[in-house]
Image (cartoon, rainbow, N blue to C red; front, side):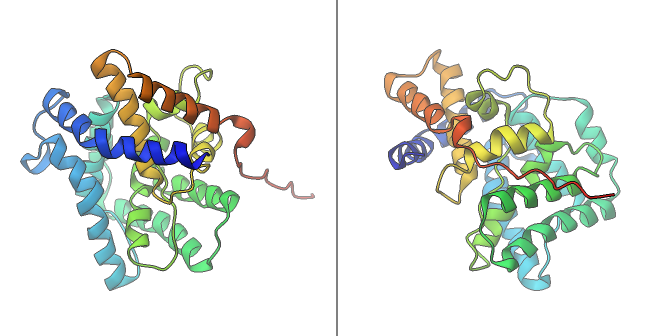
Length: 261
């Protein structure tokens, strides 16, 4: 990815993100969320408060996990920022609190172990994300997209707590997938799509804060919806992003070796 494109995209996020969130908070599906939060409050909780909660747990216990109420809040955020799926909240609520803690802790442990290893390899990172996604997807109502919301919390938490500059696991959003895969067709929300068509393209950016790249691209799509079309500068930025994330530039996870019988 060209440094100028990445810098322009992050600058775009700084200019547009709060405006887009306020617009969604005022004009979105719901006006009031858990704890009488607005969507703006809920988004701030996801970006700022929840990583600090996890950081406190890690400092005290050397472990991180989600409580069931926190998972429910993350689902609220997902369904308000993206497509609403009415069956998911009930499925999330049906999870045993101990299982939420168990599987989220196991998933975060995979990432923590990766940090402790000192490795910094794109293919290995993708493999770690795959293992972590599989663990949290054992919870009812948690599919690949929801799993990435959970895992996106690890980067902001561990960068403030360890010396390892962990990259984010960015959210598997419709908008960003469509931007980066124009010819793919209808999204099936599979782990394969995320690990082969979204995450490797976002890993082409040099920043560790890949969730901010996801948010910047979401802003471009949101601005397009609000105003009818992007201005020339933003439209050209989107063209540069698509050019810089072509499939021939991606890093992908190497195929698994077949065992001899």
